[in-house]
Image 1 (cartoon, rainbow over the protein chains, first blue to last red):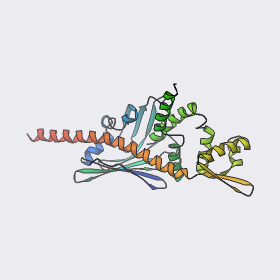
Image 2: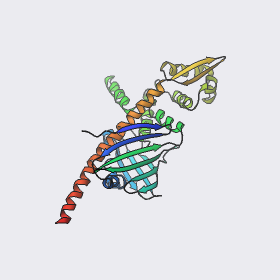
Image 3: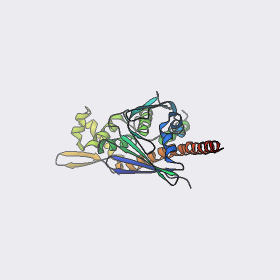
Length: 158
Length: 127
């Protein structure tokens, strides 16, 4: 059976993502903290994104910086922040500093009989910040809308 | 990570240029503003440095799209976000879920490979 990714708005300020992986916490944690491993799964290849560079200093107080490209981006986009807590193999906390009102992300790794339950929580500074993240992500249309738009433009002969 | 929103912002830029009539920057600004607090048309006109008539038109378009509702109390017409907002939240959550599901499917592959490697290394050590 395919593993389910669950997403839930857990409070006014928080969204949580849950998923189980077939492997010990030690291994799953490694895949989140070693750049050569994270680069293999974080970039969203199916969305057409590519990972230009990935710097991770996975220590409490250390920083990270990810740079992505997409054919539709005018220039590469950087995501960066700081690790507030790094406790192998059970807990990772980092800040998201690329925009105002960035969330704090907490990931916990809980091993159960050889499998690992991963819970990722994004806590926003206020209800308004999360509401705004949600509305800026939906007003004006999503990528699939643009697929439709592209098809329409092709049909119109552009 | 706010990558979904970042991506959408870029797509919005494209949207603006190709379909200005459908996705107007002022109207998006009005929606953002109403996301923070309800406002009268006069407030909105002031905030966006527009005439009352101009703002009424924008609000009218948003109202038709179901994004905004208005209510006249006394002489003041108050605007607030429409019911669509709840649908927007549900849509955002679904997009967000799809994003993480795609990532996690790729992570499965990495974890499986590390598992196999560890087992193979373990066998070598025991020999």
